[in-house]
Image (tube, rainbow, N blue to C red; front, side):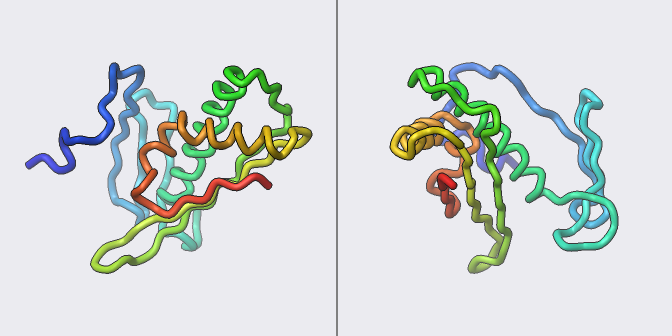
Length: 147
């Protein structure tokens, strides 16, 4: 059985990278390892004691890092110099929806020294470039905010 296979969503022109992981145990004392050995994490439920991260933290870290990379591309196209201390604080919520579970997210972007109008245009351009933003658009509640 194939779930969420080829459909009318965005199709890649070519694949430039494929991340591969092997996960066992899920959120509750599970582990996840990348095929290249560069990532190995213990998993736990959000808010649980002990050592381990959760999928929402991993998603927040991945999205914020990708957003910064996309911002560098957008800034280059706009000829905007990014500050060295730019930062994205990502917050990812998980909670029940009618009959399932869902996510919501906030990206709080700090661009010190950039005029508000220019920074806002940069965020809009970045949001259109970032693969995480494109994947979540229209699927979950997302706020991208200049702080």
